[in-house]
Amino acid sequence: MIRVLETPAALAAAAAQDAADRIRRAIRDRGGARIVAATGASQIAFLDALVRQPDIDWGKVEMFHLDEYIGLPVDHPASFRKYLLERLIGPAGITRHHLLDGERDAAAVCREVGALIREQPVDVALVGIGENAHLAFNDPPADFETAEPYLVVRLDERCRLQQVGEGWFAGLADVPETAISMSVRQILAAKSIVCVVPDQRKAEAVRAAVEGPVDPMTPASILQQHHDITIYLDRESSSLLTS
Image (tube, rainbow, N blue to C red; front, side):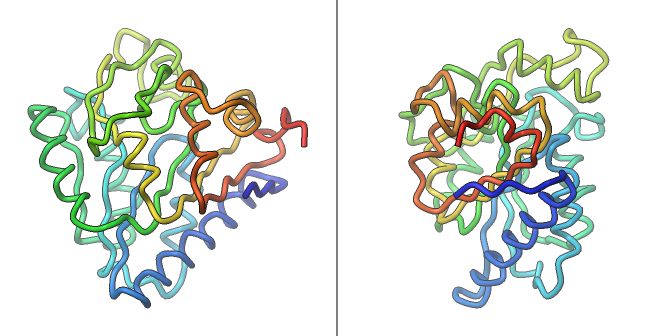
């Protein structure tokens, strides 16, 4: 399902209400909710709206991390661990969370957090789409086949330039070339997906992901295969859609 809202603020509010409903439902039905959370500039307003949603027992929420740069310290402004601690974990009061430590051995982190996420299904994956249509840090050509929950990936130049453009790094040379990312198949294993994609700069990626073929060169196109996904767009990010 695609929902188009007039403004980024309206998009964030609608997506937050949807995500909150899904989290509450999982807590009601199972006694707890397992979620995956995305980061980046496009998710800030959404996460701010989500943590302000009423009647979520965040103490019953277990959160998994979508991706992280390799070699970046947690106090770096671009650290996704820092981002989640400041914008979701801290404000919401989530006590059970599994962050990806990019300063440790990456293969070991993939194994350890991968074993934890395999223990039970994820109820809700909160994701975005990159300017190059990446899904998490699965840049084109994305690995659509691996069953491993997490993998080490190499970031392409367009992805790294996006990070500079969003103001996380001073220049391209400062952006790490490798990262830990949740795999495409692990994202698709979530029971439901809420995908938040505002801004004109994402319009071409949205068009390719929604209307184009499922193709590893357009990683987010794989979302077409999920049975319960809602993609939230604003007027600008949806501007190139033909229907």
